[in-house]
Image (cartoon, rainbow, N blue to C red; front, side, top):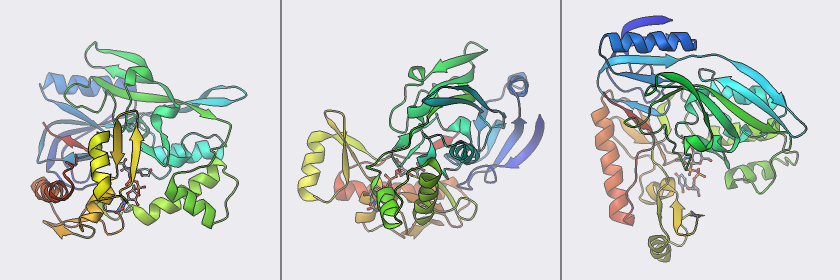
Length: 340
Ligand code: EPU
């Protein structure tokens, strides 16, 4: 267990904002995690668990304990004719997990290639890309329950997954620290139709064998075109959720904007593309306060040289206002705020 003081939150989050964290503790095992929680409670301090900080926006200083989850583990625990089940430590780098699983020729997470972050963060916002989401393969997860003070196993149903959401997403009500995830992967390949961007890439490159490794390679190429590399450009990936609105409101909007991409969500809801709305509002490349709308993808906000989260707040409000004035839709931030 490594304990440090006064570390920069900008160095721990991919949007590269925020001040200093009073304490930072890196935990490699469940026992370390208990020690870190004890360290915080002894000092009467709040704590916050971070993976790679790729979906968390830091604001100012954090007068508490940042727990960096680095719990290891990668084990095939079961295999039958149709599937293989892996138990993966929450601190494993997610894309390294995807790579290993694809090399072993198992399907289920290949479309979630090249997503930044750690395995244990994927259930929090039900990470998804190109038609797959973690809720599809996750069978259970192990976590520490900070209400009952014990390690527990939660089933997929316990996680209450929905679009970019789970029981873990709300920092006020959540009371679990994920320590491992258990995924059941298939031996059968993905089948067409694929998500449009992926379909186009596979078609234009003549790929007809949809092996996990081929799909992974295609996803990596497609993402590289549309998403800024976190190592080089500060961002938190998609900055807004795709809005889910009433069917009646959507029908009204589609009369005026028949080209708006949209997907039915159950009987009476429709999902719109936030990136399309921002793009149509003419905001691609828009920059102010040291922040910018990524020119290749309007859903992504990049931090060019801002150092304060208030710069992001102002920039975000202007985007929300412009989109609301033009379309009557109120966009919501997708990454979580780290606040005391
Ligand atoms: N679009 C535009 N202009 C833009 C961006 C998008 O017109 O600048 C249009 C696209 O042409 C498309 C639609 O909007 O018709 C949807 O765009 P895209 O297919 O690129 O996907 P997305 O909805 O923008 C979601 C996830 C991404 C994920 C991709 C691929 C959310 C909030 N985002 O983006 O996740 O990689 O689908 O599956 O659901 C992330 O969460 O950080 C992330 C990158």
